[in-house]
Figure 1 (tube, rainbow, N blue to C red):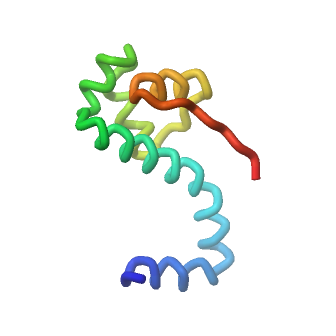
Figure 2 (figure 1 turned 90 degrees about the vertical axis):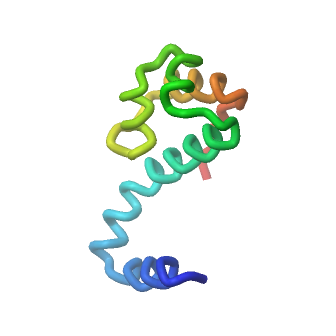
Length: 90
């Protein structure tokens, strides 16, 4: 466990921090997944935009977590990355 993981674990004991963390967790995980898949394919945001027909600025906003894409957009991104979209409730 690195220092950042230790700090996060400590911060999650604070109820206000945990509440904010829980609100943004899904967007963060989604962004991380898209960035990872894009990097696996050695694609820039601009290249992914060209493949998907989306604007590079939209991909950037999704990857920074500043917007939440709808399911249709996620499907387009998944297909552009050669992936299948799988949504699951736990």
